[in-house]
Length: 132
Image (tube, rainbow, N blue to C red; front, side, top):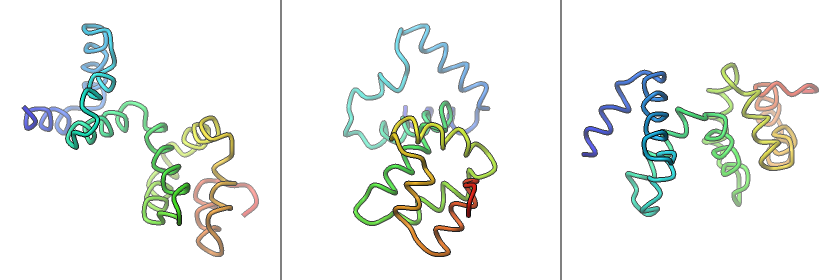
């Protein structure tokens, strides 16, 4: 049931969840996120896929959030600020590498092209850009 899945995802350690997801992959031959795409319109499954991606490959999850925040018509400043501020001292180096790999442009360049002024300077400083 949905409640049982929510209980498991919210009460298990990251190591336990990774072990469970690896076991699922071994047992069924597919990553669980692939199998959860059976109904792409199901909001619960969409949120569950996002949670699993965030837990297992956070750099890919946060790269996608940043890409969507920057590449919209107008910047999603809330999402951009949230990711940069919360991941700055955690795994920003890996997120920047993933962003460069996925988008063929540096995160620094994308932020500089989409923001300006003190807001731009703050974001660039938080992501560790060299010449702020």
